[in-house]
Length: 334
Image (cartoon, rainbow, N blue to C red):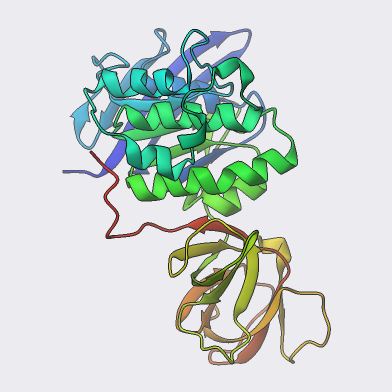
């Protein structure tokens, strides 16, 4: 059985815009859907969900034909640009609504992953923007979806609230092991969350891009607001430790998204560069990009001139976007 979402769709929006898209998206991790405003990202998501009555063509999920399925029977958890919570229900009531759709009796893991326990009795009108987005995500997750669609879920929030919410999204998606399609304009959100990038502009597919590189690390200590992580494969004397905002617990794994514009390669150990860290790396492939070995982990950067196979270099990291990684022992799904 194909573990993909396959589609070939046409949607005439009028006023000169027509969506004509075909593709195959892996149902694994987070696929970021990016492109300019008005390019068709939201229209694609809505058409895949069955929310656009005028969409023509086919959609297949893991080989099953969705073309005649209703939005509800497709079992999609959809998080819209606004929270769209039910104002007559408190937070617990909104979560129960999502769970009731799939006869889910226990959604404690969702409450814990999104830190909603203290909000359950609150009316939604009194929630902050960030709290409301967490509840909207929780409601979508409580319906036990087989795929999650997020349409710019952080739109309208300031930078501080976005930074606060990104780890919650990463943790919920990782622990539930549910594939996600994530529409965004934000390079930071892509770096923090995406496993791959699907481009769309002018109603047409523009192709695939690799997500920014990500290294894996383990949390070695946790304070009130900061956690210390060490790259997997590195020892305590290797200079491969970072202080980051708390997004995980002691001994958990996190992924460290590395924005490409925050990485510097040099042939000599840098002095005081202002980098979070400067790490010794080795070139393991130099064609079609520079593949580097970082304490046994492999990342690939765009080629900036020829590199000698086996060359010892230094990688300076100026910024990091962390993401919780799945815990194979976690019991999230109901």
